[in-house]
Image (cartoon, rainbow, N blue to C red; front, top):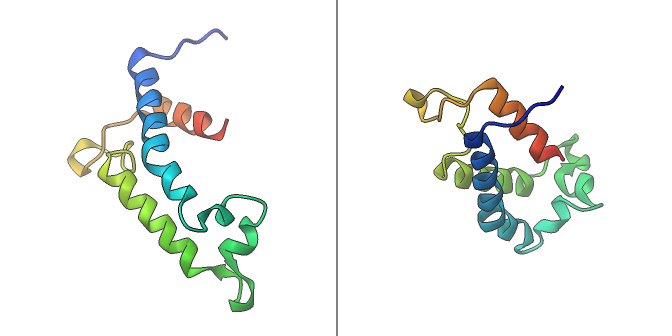
Amino acid sequence: MDFNLPDDLVATLATLDAFIAREITPIEQADDNLRFFDHRREWARTDFEGGGLPRAEWEALLARVRRVADAAGHWRYALPAQYGGQDGSHLAMAVIREHLAA
């Protein structure tokens, strides 16, 4: 199947990439946050001695990134506008997920 993405969706991906480079990457690179993303990630994220629950530092980092993404309008993208979203379609969400996973 030959499928071209709509221009507005291509623009959304570019906006998302720019946001990640500008806002998320500096958070990832700050302090000792790389440990949550490199080969040490499982041990950094999980408190094995505490029953295998997520570590408080990992949850705090996720909460921080979630707030930044929400302030930029990305966190609730798929929700209806009346709930703070952008009325993102199923197609858009599938494309965004594939783009981020690539």
